[in-house]
Length: 419
Ligand SMILES: [Mg+2]
Image 1 (cartoon, rainbow, N blue to C red):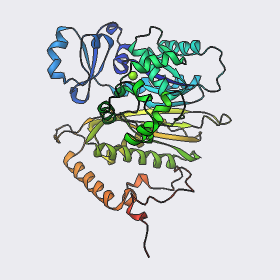
Image 2 (image 1 turned 135 degrees about the vertical axis):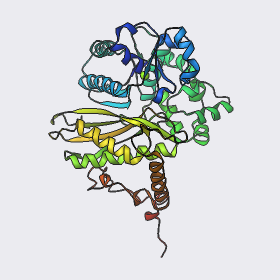
Image 3 (image 1 turned 45 degrees about the vertical axis):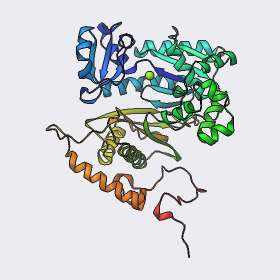
Image 4 (image 1 turned 90 degrees about the vertical axis):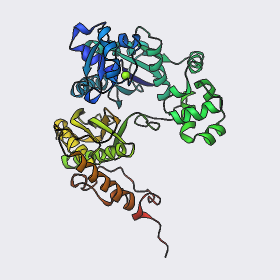
């Protein structure tokens, strides 16, 4: 069994923890530069306030309804997130951080007889120790766990947990879930499915394997099996994540050297920033996390994460690497052997035309040109043709790939040669 733990209205809930006068009041949180609404408490949702609404458009409405407005405070949200993940880590053998406020938990090999009670107790503990209400969904697959957690929120189940293990109930929920709300089905796929008269998750799982493989691809088929209760995705294994930009890896060997970890984290940060540039997006924070190997209970266990917030949102690899290294330094402890590290970009928004501000941390126009040049060189000569000093080292963090074939099609240096 897998579980998904998802914090409710996370940013708004974090603001509430330290400000009791916000309890039962509408709260919204704004994006970088107070641009638009990125989080709403339930009361704010009930007022009809929409996600992504530009602040200036609803300012009067918010005032009129006494809505409490906050600028995003990522260091706070990052710290609350770390506390929640820490509690999970203390109660289950494996935790997979999915986003700042969501994590999958592995419920195999646990010593309990009553799963329902276990879930309720876990939720109660998180609420008591952090002040953050969470929804916990449980199912035979990660997709069903995700669906269960969504259902908890949709149906406002008072005790905040749901175990999906009854076929009849699963069918009922699939019939009430739109394809665009299925985990891993993006907007493009949803459109394509709608055009083929497939509207609900139930319609989707009723499709033939052949049809799904032909119209979507093998990933679409994996999602179908998952929804039917056949596990395809294991822990640390995800369908194409659409919402967050993240890079992580389990290392080929356990790593304890700081320099090896730094090299890995720098590579992830560079790769996240490159992805943001490709999508013409910027981020205002990044989270770095590290952990030991949960399967090596003979070794001391440790995991931690740190959120670094940029003064100016960016997609520069250079600035991303600097921030990631800074974050790593805050959490690295030399006495442990690490199995995994990751970098997640947070507070993502569209990159608009460059505006130069007098408070900017760096010269944006110059940074933009530098990154453009970097991307051009890489497009032409391959990802590894040029990198930052921090990224270079012994490569000890790389996965074991003794049997890997060459990147024939994506890297100029590895093109097949004709003699
Ligand atoms: Mg959430």
